[in-house]
Structure formats: C-alpha cells, structure tokens
Image 1 (cartoon, each protein chain N blue to C red):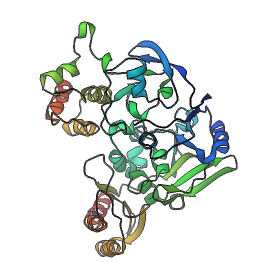
Image 2: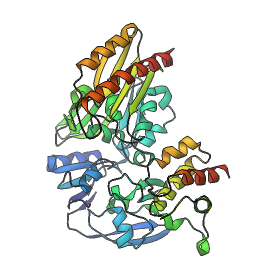
Image 3: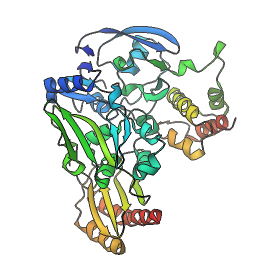
Image 4: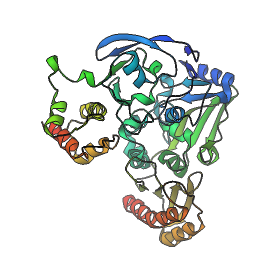
Length: 161
Length: 271
C-alpha cells in the first residue's frame, strides 16, 4: 500500500514521452502542475482546473485524461504522453498537427495541446470516425477563437488519409 | 484552484480499503475516477483529511455476467463499460444512457459506481439504476450489505452509504428486452442534464423514470395504452426545483413534452 502524509514530499517517477523522469510532489499536487512546474513540460496548458475546458488533457497509459483531475502520485510508474511527444525529429509536425495547421484549426493555440491529445487517443481507437463522432469528442474541449469548424475539418482530413 | 492538503492512501486490496475506511470514516473520501470528487476538491467545495485511491485495485476492475444481473466493480470506468461487447444485448438502457455521461475524456476516467455514489439528481447512471431496479453492494469491516437503488439514493448528493463503507460494485438487472429509450435535455451535449427521461417497455406497461425533477430519480409504472394521460397527470404532481439552468415550471414542461416521446421510442424498440 502507498501511504503518504499531507505534507510529505516524495519523488514520483514516471515515463514522460518515452523518457524516465522523476521529481518531487506532495499528495495534493495535480498532474497538470507536476508536468509544468516540477518536470518543466509546459506544452500542457491549464485552463479551468475542474475538468471542463480540456486544455490540460494528456494520455495516461494511452488514455486521454484531464491532468487537472489527476494527482501526480496517481501516475507513479505509469506512462504519460503530452503534446511534446507528437512532433518528429527536428520538430516535423505529425499528420494530426499538420492537418491543424493546414485547416486553420488554431489561432492562439491555448486549447490545442489538449485537443491534439484527445484525438491522438480517439483516432487510435477509431481511425475513421464520422463527423458526428468527431464533434462528440470535441465536445470535451473549449476553444474561444476558431469556432471549431477548422478543428473538425482538420480531424476529418487525418481520418480520411 | 488547488485542493487543500490531504493524506493519500492507495491500498492494494478491498480488505485494506475497508480497514482504512474503518479507521478514517467520514474524514476520508474514496477516490475512483475523480471526475466529480477532484473538481469539488479543486474548487474547495469539499475537503478531506485523506483520499483513499481505489482506482488501481484489480479486484474492483471487473465486469461480471451473473446471468440475470450484470455486476460492475467500483474501478470500472464508464468508457470501459461502453466498450463492453455485450452491452447492447445485456444492458440496452445503459448503451443508450452512457454516451450522455460527461464527455469522452471524462468517461475515460469516471467510474460507473462513482457516478452512482456521487448521487447527482440529474445524472444518468443513478436514473438507469433506479429504473431497472438495480442494487448497490457495500462492504465494511462490519460485513456486506446490498441495497436496492431506491433505498440507496436518499436525496441530492446524499446516499445511505455509511462513512466506513466501500461501494464494491453495482448490479444492473440484465436484458429485459430491447424496448428501452433514454433522452435528456442539456444546454450542450455532455453538460449536466436539466432533466433526463428513461423508459423500459414491459408487456402492457412502461416503467418510466425521470432525473432532475427531485433530489433523486423518480420511477413510475404506467399502462401502455394510457401513457399520455398518465404522463400529464404525473407532470402536474411533480414539484421540480429551480437552479441556475431552469425553473421548476420549465422542468415540468420539459418532462411533459419529452416523456411521451421517450415512452413511444421504448415501445417502438420493443416491437
């Protein structure tokens, strides 16, 4: 059994984007803050901190999850993937990222990391979704500048290919 | 916002969990998927001395087909149940209701039992459990007890669970035919429902349930050939409640308009 006191700081080891890393956290530290402040992986953005906006979505063992609703201690020994995992060598965009660029699916980019991670999980499960299915997954994200049409188009482009 | 400090306990077995609950009682909160609990902690609507994380207990991550009942363990996520190959055949009402529960990302972590434990009056799974006449299995050091859904869900966010009890599973009665329907009204898909209506067609009757009209789901059995009149009469009786999203009168109107369609759909699917 793992047992930690309120103010106890422990070293939490995770596999982040394929690399074993570790940093200190106390039990109440959210995964979103652990990624950004303890591990320096600032690609994951933090919006509402109660699971609505979707900006902080990451993959835990391949499954799209709100990092603001997950504690750092819960991912001990597990595999976490963030938006930093997507681009290839020399920053070459992956097909989903390229489709976002091609279709004006982002403006300010604040919500984009979370949306990319959600669709990374979803397209792995369902590579050829309908538009309704795409919109259903997108429901879990808030974007305040593009109006979503470009995002739907971008995912459709990848889904076709 | 960030949660206030708490002890974190991650037991490996049900026995360890029950022992911890006996020790901490109501000062502890059970953490499964955390999709309701962690927002409330982050917003500091609640606080806990300790969180007992049951999400990695393998014995609770089980869907078992017990013939007339389908038992769903406390660590089973909503998306895992939604992807269960026998769902449409064994639990058609759940197949219809689950896509309305939160968003894809929340269902990835949110558990079936957690939603029932949280007991939001408008949420989908407590309504489905009440309508089907399901059960909740509770375990503590004092022993195990099984409660009917209607005895478990007392009022808004209030259940019959004692502080030292762990919900180990819920049981849904299996396959009562395909005559089911589920619809809800929400501002946006995935939002909390303003009201949710579900129906199961039986031989000459329909079991009709509504969430979001009272502190807990309400269920009534009505005759198929007098359904419209029975719904109208029930709508007049219902008090409803007012919140940010809708007045009590709007809730009654929504029910009056939505329920006949849900009943009709359930009857149509049964044929």
